[in-house]
Length: 224
Image 1 (cartoon, one colour):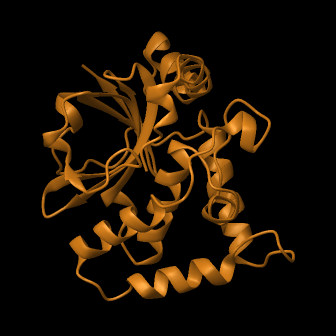
Image 2: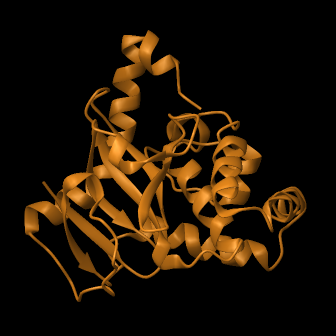
């Protein structure tokens, strides 16, 4: 779902830009330090958005991502009453199961984009918070929350971790940080984005400049 408020109100755009700056904090530090840890497993996929990718398997520098993954695992083991929408999530996954992979991508992107866009200071009272899918279903969220929910939905459907990446990037047109999900299918990278209604090839997008991408096993620093 495109956040139309960001294009209509200058104060809103400034607040959105400030909030999303937190997304780039880890990537900026990594770029400044030139840091690359032990290499993650190599993947026979095209490099994203024309960048050079530096892989690492060290996820210690990404506590918000690791925290969201760990909390979601815990939530699936049991939730206090009213604290998560486990039944709604399971019904959603079962509805997607067995569909053609491209149909899964399209339907997951469309259905989760129906959630409302809410920035973290309003939703959580902090500048940057990475929510679990259960939290996202219950309270909506911002760009990385859409991406995380789509990532976990595809993982629940059996898509291997190595075919998925959450990509934190700079939207050159809007001049704000943004997060999307990239899925590798049949040798091509596809983008699931709350700002784009349909699933599109990454090669068709020219206004995204990736900073880093991440999955459950590692991360990639992107250099132009």
